[in-house]
Image (cartoon, rainbow, N blue to C red; front, side, top):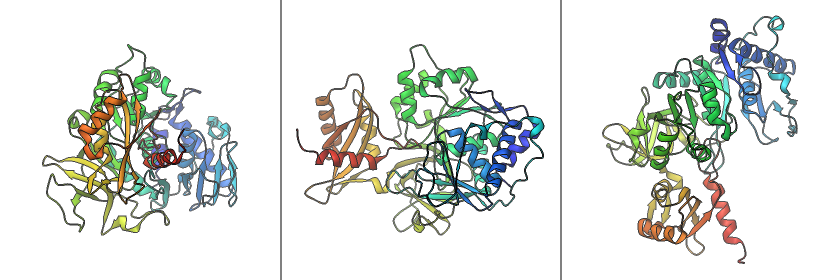
Length: 479
């Protein structure tokens, strides 16, 4: 089955139902959107794109990136988001002003590509490529700790993941969903696809200041936001705005939601906050209401049905409940990294080894202790940066924080550094004293004050960028 076939089925059964609600043009119905996919697919075929080809997508607008990915999948070709003209590919599709590929034919898009053809000019529906084992799309991992890895998911894989999400948490009916996670990230792309597969409407996410108005105007009932964007939106909302009665679910993605931000979001946005945990490699793993995890640092929810997880020691032996070890799970599609982008050892013996430290409580709560490759080692004492961040976020005037390791100049040990975003009531002397008192040997030697913590498109902290910034700061001459 082709992953775009359900969209065509909705176009036939509910042709006038909205698929996309866009602020800058009339809504696109399912019949219109299916015709757009056919029209783009025909353009691609006319240009020489064929089943099995890989196509780099260097386009600005999220709607265009997502729609091109589906049009390619419809004909059996494989798309992937691209930033580098040198990315290996058979074709490159670009927005105006983006560099062409030096190695492959380049197609430049314009607005006409995404206009629904008039009903009388659509012709017969394009036959979809029906090999479910064909690659649907290539997704890159976050790359926050090193080179981003790539994972190719087939049509069968992506449909299986969408069905698992539907069974764990169906969309409200009628679904009207908005996400501030971009489709260049696997999480954002798969959420948009999931909405269309379930017959919902995607409300195009506007600029952050306009999101509250769009939620009310379009009666959005499912909102997806990383914590950093959620915090920024609340900070910019005028008094008296929110909470929003239409929101049945606010899905927190990408990184952890602090207890303080959760309580603020309950009051200003919606009491219906949920948290999800998953990965590009394995899909959705755990889900739970935010109220269930408050006060449990690192808790991400309970395992969804059908997911098989084990916490193991370094030798691969399963550990008892409430014991921290390495998280491994039976993977759902994507049984290896694409090309040579990642280590083959991550997928072995039918398991995917996530690289996360975790424990399962006696009552089935999954608690993530941090990435094994991000653990900070100070003279033999080890700590996950997330545990330091959880404590520091409770300090007065700290609006956001990221902890990370930097190497010592004189010994082969880590030093702790932190980047902080400050708010009202912050006092640096008080901050230093609290760090010494509550963090001990893990008190930061370097503190960078920033306007915003760098995060990737999934909302995860980019610690590599922070390490480079700290190194540059240390190398700068004193003034």
